[in-house]
Length: 282
Image 1 (cartoon, rainbow, N blue to C red):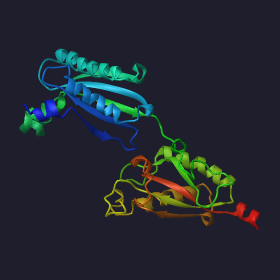
Image 2: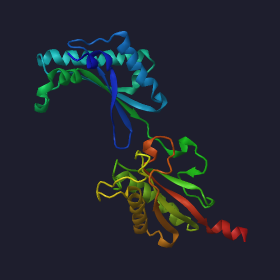
Image 3: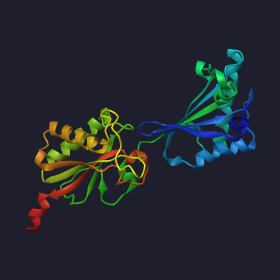
Image 4: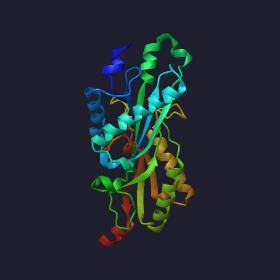
């Protein structure tokens, strides 16, 4: 048995979903065991310490076994493993009401391509996955000076309008259903305040420092941030926003909000002119 997986590697972050609204952490168990030693229990606590528990909306816990043994036994064992992790989370201050799912899934059958390394494959399957679902974030919660989520008639040049739900999957410039609903809302505001002119700014995250721009997986070209901005530009045109009021530009990874990658895969509006304020000055 590979002790690296069974004893030392207690948990790891498996995946962050497209818009990073949740995280999955895995806790590994020894063969035929459903309890954790002190080191393993502390490791479960350590991943909770690394996330903002205030922002947790719900937690789901799923237990698994390797492919050996009878189904009935494995369902009991995987459920016991899930309960072990749940009890540790409760001991460390996680509220019971946010744990919405607790389920033993039984055994995980091996893929054919893993037959060459059975011990390692099985050690990865003797685990509990803790799915942490976060509350939806809105930009106003971050209180960044000069960054807003709505358009008003008194917005000044340099103000930025962050579009909360105009967020993208990794490598994509396609507008999601949520993004289109957000743009429908912003179009109503833009039609109300026709004095506002703006630049549509596209952004990306997570590219190496020497690569300022990312590749759009649809076009296979390094033009992701400009494509994101252009998609918003074209959508607003369809919503009868005059092209004379708006321009678009891609900024790559050069303007991170430093609040996490979800906020950097974004499009926002930079106010470039407010005719009403100009007329008042005159």
